[in-house]
Image (cartoon, rainbow, N blue to C red):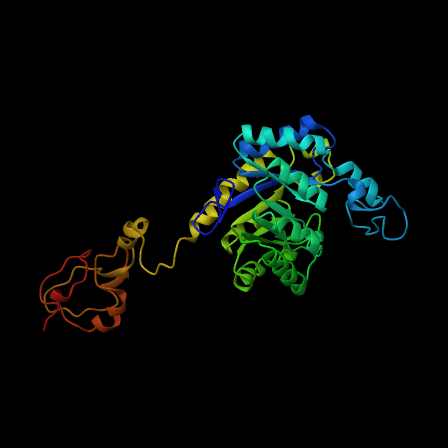
Length: 348
């Protein structure tokens, strides 16, 4: 499949999406710098989130409208205030997308309601992303699928029935190019909760491209995801963690994103194909395999023993599998130490 001018799939470079989220910290200039970070690092796309606090939730401090998980980065914050702080103003979208275009990378967004879908369509985005917590919003999925553009759906905090329903809704509404992202909606996510073995299962189960939305620290888990078949990697990105931003604590800085781009592609290239023969790079190594050698000077008629016949490197002599069968045999000529063992050295 293709998103914009980028081909996605096995044998292609992993499609790296730099998720800006609210890391612009309310500054357009910083948002543009994050686009530069993505472009300079080699990512193929930068992603926004399109919502307002009013399209996300109610301005309420009633039960459920305040983050009450003690280990959350946002413990005690009202949802409304959090979304108001993190949202990307609608008026910023066009300049951010133009800057991304000028820098040669794609820019798209996660809409959170139907008005956002219409807004993004008018801006000509190349695809749409459904965030994990929105994958139960079937009317939203129908709206993005009806555009005919590729759809990326994250699977965080979801059970298999919810994923199945989201996929079916998207396909029934006209989606032909679908990507599912294995995701754990923890911020940050402990590596042991990433459960990357789900990636090949999702690919087999739904017959679509599968990627990984990564909320872990570092790049190791994302590279492992590529080794398991992920063709898309989404990673939260900031220009400077210490400068703040709602997601900055678990976001990658420029040097980390650049390393992810490099190592993810290296991981992809390492997959190759099923090969049970020495490769071109191993030709020299084969010569250094062990083989059977005469280890001491011996004379014609002498018996081969464990003292004068050894299995050593290099590999010019007979295969070590013949060693036991050679013991007790006699040689037919004088042989110097260091001579590779050969069948024509034996008496009949």
